[in-house]
Image (tube, rainbow, N blue to C red; front, side, top):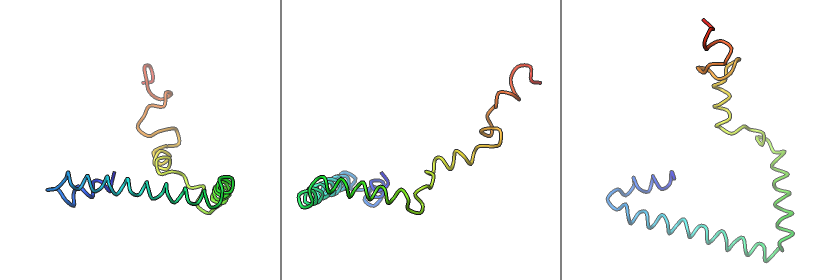
Length: 99
């Protein structure tokens, strides 16, 4: 989405042509990736490719930085106070009869 926004701001007068070129390049990249993947599977065989992929995933699991939390989880935890989310009632300090 960011790349498409960049393309639209680069050619605001020719938005339709820019969108057509963007779609062409996007689909071309998919086609090249599929063709390259097919050649790899033909050369190595499907079981070999699957085992190599599993090995790469296993190696990445123990790689430095593999345990990094996603950004949205970090933001959510940053908003949490000791008693729960900041700015929201916790149930024991607000409500009818708490004043």
